[in-house]
Length: 470
Image 1: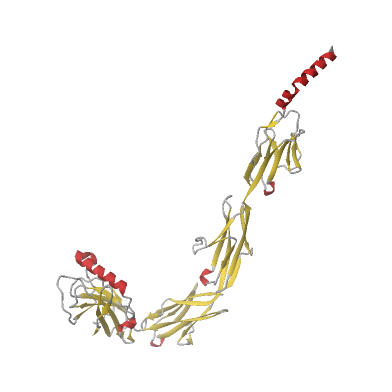
Image 2: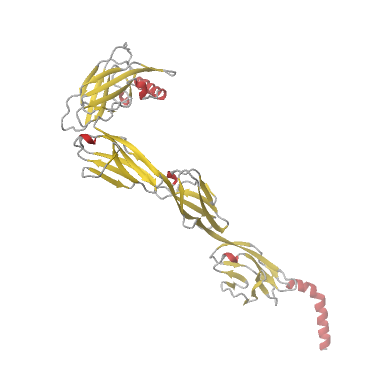
């Protein structure tokens, strides 16, 4: 009876075996996927199986088996199973990248593949690693840095400004080549690597441009007077650092209680106290380094300084103009020379008239005004709406100064016209001009004078050689 029962059971199982076997085969509920994770993070790779039964589930990477069922085969303590058969990898490293296979150990050997890509933040290093480079002025230099990371980072270059902040991008790629170096190109260059993983990283490279001394003078002409003080300044740029010497009329100057030499950064100063007659003359500063020598000249003079005009561009009166200027002179002024002329012009030409030349004697200057002379002169019988230019030159006991820059002015307009006549100059001492500003002129006058001045300034570029003063 028992034997028949077992036979019947086998027959029934044979009859239903195909459909029952299909229903109980294991299958994956999860799907293969590509995962991107950053170094140091924790990653979980899912492997969910239905109807696993007595089959064994394996995790392997290449030929290396990581887990078998619930048994940890790998000795890597960063790897473990969680929530069933999900594989967790903590503290990810770049070498963890690759394919991970969750496999069912049946005869079919079905598996599910996860691809892991490890994102590595950028890193960058300078070549050479010291980050220090030197090159001669006029020659080329190549700056290089190397970046790494995943994805491969992009590289770009900037140059730090005086405030130690990077300026606009000046180059892309790991190599930056600078041709025909100038001294201004010395400084700190910054190489930046960025791949979108974390923050960009930078490395600084210091470029020193070696060049012979380059000198700039603060003033090429210094005005002073006997008993007073003067300061001569040379600004020296050089790499290697230059030694600086001072000369008067080609003779070296030694430091004394009255002649004091000082240096602050690249500013070299010669201060002369209690100036005497023999202190006036030509001075020079000479800078030397291993690459060469440079010299710049200055003049210390008792002659007056050039006149500086204070008058407004637009006159208030239709037939006269008040011209005001200042002149620096320690000794009293002996003579002042005023020259002016009218300039006729339109859109296609300009025709200057003849110069009116006057020698004027300044009034006595009180001792309480030791330096600056302020003078004012009214020029009369001018043409309404006329365009004029003027220059001034002054003389003290040391001689005539340089001719001033040309001063340009426009006379106010009215409905009447005055025929050309010689102008009359009326001198007054130490009075400042109170001529009206353009805002106080009538509307038509403002328009006329503004247009005339704009035309004059666009058409005329004056040169002292034009003056005909000899």
